[in-house]
Length: 516
Image 1 (spheres, rainbow, N blue to C red):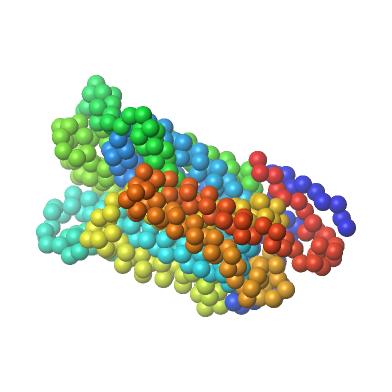
Image 2: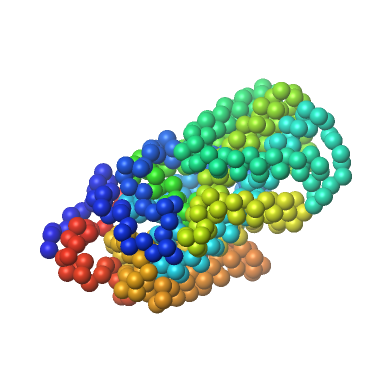
């Protein structure tokens, strides 16, 4: 038997033949789900940085951050620190969930087969797809508010009648954004990556200019306004819980991408490039964006609202107060690009993969994207009339609570139970002797562990007696999902087929990658 060797950070990729699938079960394989070999990977740290930058910069991201500043009940500076802490936590989380896909070149829908079974993985992938559709619809609505802002600046108010809470201009804007996103998706992943590389920096330029314009008008009141507007009234343990609740809610905001980060990591050239992009795009970019959000919201409250009423939390509404049609149109287009960009990457591409995983022989990546677009359109159209009434923080916490156990199961299964060793051929094999066959292709123990953990995490959001834990729903779900999975599967995991263990394929006898 060949001696085992440790896979270092610069040596995480496997020999080329490990990315070739010869036994292609049509129920499990298509070209979109197939492993990406090293030669097919074009993403570096800048591409990963822009994935996160656009996610942070979206209109929903700004609205959530501004809402937390207003509703958390603690000083704005503490909210700022809590959001930055969330950035570091998410960076660590995606480092763990992304590394297996860097090494093996497969998306989350395929990675889930190792813990859930080759057919059992269809359930969590479908669940992730449904959550992605909800987020896709919500982000499409927020992006449409930027288009509506520009249209109002050009043509005036327009008809005032509403349908499902939106005017004619609102609906026209919503349809335009939906069509624009589908057109971008049809261009392919490489073109979308280039689009993100432009949109991310452009949004920061506009946000900085907007803040400067507001700060000049606010003058010396700006700094004091930040302290008075977001001073909060909670003290002691209530303030501590609020601080970590903000952190938990921001982690939940990124929950969908945290689980599916392998969908993007599989295109990066090295783990080192992934980590660098994660650091620059999460704690660094999030700190800068949160700073801009904090002072823009406070400044707008002083300059445009005379420090009265409810502060504006949507940057499109703030820009509308400027009164300069040219600036309004430029800002609206920029916010549209940022929100559309991350919507495609975080809420369109993962569901497309997940839906393709349901029936690979019949549902391609593009067909899965079309299904996502249709359901997302319906959900976004209902945002004002129904879904948005729960409030954005509760919406974020609920979707995060649903997905959290999937993350815990993925990490514990890969790093703890399997020690980082997977078999790519078995991921696409319907052979009952396969490592991930379990019972008829389903690992009922893992599915039960995830379901039980989800009950607890969702209850933390909606059960009145557990209200204080709402911001921790994602963390609770992830920890319980991993714990329950470990208890259910300890001593029952088969890492490789007996013939491989006997040395017939010694090239697979490699130890787990170091977690550093």
